[in-house]
Image (cartoon, rainbow, N blue to C red; front, top):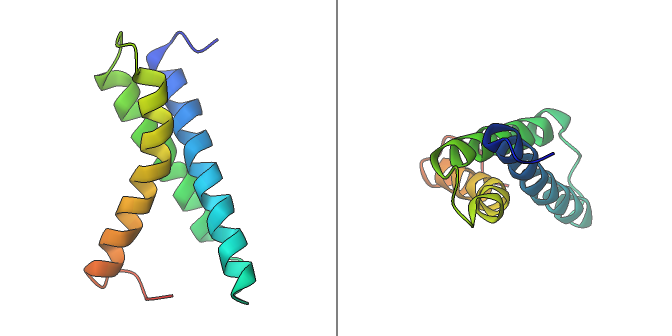
Length: 92
């Protein structure tokens, strides 16, 4: 099923981003903050795009699937930190 690098990247990047978003929701709930559905879905969508990009660029390499998954997780975390650092996103 995941032999196509675009599909593999999308699925695995999205899975990484989904896990990252769920962890973020869990942390927010523990801090008494409301759930932001739009933010959740944008996080997962960006992770899918990161995964697709990695799937295309790393097609044929042994670590493509792992990299797409980790890129989806870590890539969205990096972009969120960058957004806070440049004041594009409001501080939590």
